Every structure is written in C-alpha cells, then in structure tokens.
Length: 470
Image (cartoon, rainbow, N blue to C red):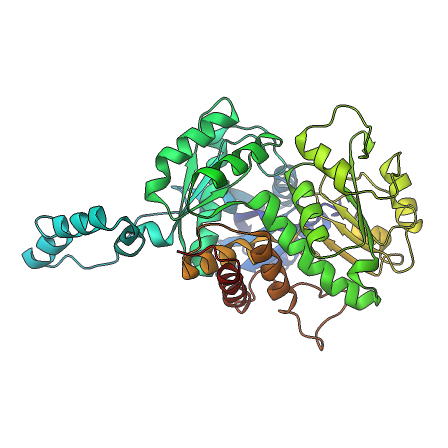
C-alpha cells in the first residue's frame, strides 16, 4: 500500500520503532524499502547497538494514521531477520505529563527574598492594589496572563468531546502564546451545561486574568458567551475560532487579490460554513470592504426569508448576499471570485471550482481534510490555501492570536475592536514582501518570527486610535 492524496505521512502520526536486525549485508536496506513500500516516510535513523550477531536500531517514521503505523510494523515484522521490538507513538510521548509547568520569575535565596516575596512585605503590595485597583495589571501576573476557556463542545474536527478531552488542545494553545508572544496562558476547561454557566464562571475568574481567549465552544452558544463577556468585563475577550480564523483569512485574501489583479471591492466571496468562524469571517471581510459575501450552510445559501435561522444567521441574511441568490453552494459558486471553506471534507467538487470567475481563489480550510484537495484543482485555481501544514498557504491562527493579545496587553487595551482585527490582518499580509509574493506564498509561515511583533505593534496602535486603552 502507498500513501494516497489526503492521507500524507505527517509528524502527527509519527512513531519511533525499535527494531532488531540480523547482522547481515542488505538487512537495513530491506527494512527501509519495506517501510517505503507501505507509504511510511523515514525521518531519522539512530545509531546501532550491536548484541551477539544482531543490531538494535531506532527509526523515526511518519505515517498517515494510527492504522498506518500498525501496517508499517506488520510489514517490517514480515521480513526475514527483522523484528519490531517496540513502537512508541511520538505524539503521545510528547503529551505525557502535559505540556505546561509553573515556573517562578524571581529567585528565592534567603530570608530577605522571602520577606519581600511573601509575608510581611507582600502586604504592602496588597494594600497598594486595594487603594489603586488598576495597579493589579502591573503588580501581579494579571497584566500578561490569558485564560484559555473552553467547554469542549466543538474541539477541532472532533465535535463535543467534553472539557477533559479538550485539555490537550488548550495546553497547546498556552504553549503557542508563550512561545510566540511571551504571553502566559492557562487552560480553563469547564464542565457546564449551557452558555450562561460559562459566562458566570468566567466573570468570577476574571480578577486573575488580563484577557480571555474563548476556544472550541459550539455555535451559536459561542456568540452568546463572547457578547456577554465583552459587555461584562474590562479586559480583552477574543473567540479565536471566530476572529483568529477571520483575521488570517483576510490577510491571505488581501495578498491573493494582489496576485490575481483584483480589488477587494470587486470580489464576490462564497463562505461555506455559517458557524462561529464563518460568521466572523463574513463580518471582517465586509468591514475590509469586500464587494459581497454569500454565506452557505447545510441547507444552502442564507438569504432573507429563509426559515430556521439563528441570531447569527439572521445577521448574515440581512447583511450579505446582495443579489439574494437562493440554492446550493454550487449555485452560489458560479461566477464567484473567492471560495472560503469553513465546513467539512469533500463538500465541493472540481466542477464547482470550474464554474467560478476567471483566476479563482480557493481557501479550503476544513481540518484535517479540506473541502477539496489542492491537487484536484491546481490547474483551475489561481491560489489555493488550506488549514494544513503539509500544503502551501496554511491559514493558521497562530499568526493572529499571540500578536493580538501581545498588542492588547502592551497598549493596556480593555477590548479588541474590529479595527484592531483588521490592523492585525494587514500586518500579517505585509509579512510577505512583494518580491516573495507568489501563488504558493500568500501568507507567512507559522514560524516567521517577524509576524508577532508586527501584529502587536499594529494592534496596539489601533487600540489607541479606538480609545479602548486604560
């Protein structure tokens, strides 16, 4: 079996194989060939350990699924003179014990340090905050700490898996905050039954945190939670599934429009998926001046007069689809300049893309499997982006949320406004120079370290312009 399109080997399914080989010429070559024949991708070979006529070897292999790892092991075990001793899943090994720990910022060397860090000296700092509450942002962790809040109802592509199972994702988010922006963050996974309980809990926790990052909360409850918390709190509240995706999509679209020689104001964009990310993306595109947006859900296009619309979709019906197109996503895509997928795998076809306007832009962002594979439309679409790291043009929220919170903290922001989000998108887009801009590079990579400082600066400036700073 060989790897197929859409199931490429990736580090997400990598394993370290400990194998024992007969100490004979050609054995290692047969081992590597067998792994390649079943679609495995060898990343590294560690040194040999020789024991009584045999060799012990550690091999790191990327696979496309857990089942693929099993097939690789079976293929290796089927070879004469070769045995798999152990196969360790590298992703599970990385997560063992969690990805976070608490560290202190000051030394505790002697009694003097203790008397300043704790009693009796700490009482002076407590009184100072009691007298001037705003000093809590400077004299505690609050000024640089984000609560990553989730109820586990819409985790990645996994759906409602609950708060405990959501923890690895929230830990990962905290890791990204610290690594890319120097922002301290902590996962707060809540066992609740309805959105109002999230709101109540976060309000009670808010004195500890300088910002709230909402994550993986199912729509339409996510809208209710964000709206209520923004109204109740004087710290930034940001639902990353909505606004992080929207910011990065806008940045990539601005650069894609430059490639195809079209102005945003002249673009018609079809968004498939009217959940949290779809609604936020529609709003930011309209705010940036795009010509028109047509939003689609499972029942087709959203337009005035359609029944069974929640509050968010009622907003879409009133503010998008100016031509009142009714029908399926295929109907909406005919003649459209842009397709943005925020839905699920395989939901559009090559024929759909072929009906779009000249030099179409396709962002198929469903994860892990996009609405259509880039290789299926490479000869039709002028620019293709996905949410995956193994294709060019990854629409990755890590380009947005670390810099947005860094900028908000640097400016002492009490809110994150639409102007701050658009400023972030423009800073991200500017991260790709005119000389480097190409159909395979419309957005910086996640590891471009110039992005976060640029985003932070732009966001802080916008916060001051919008007068949402302390």
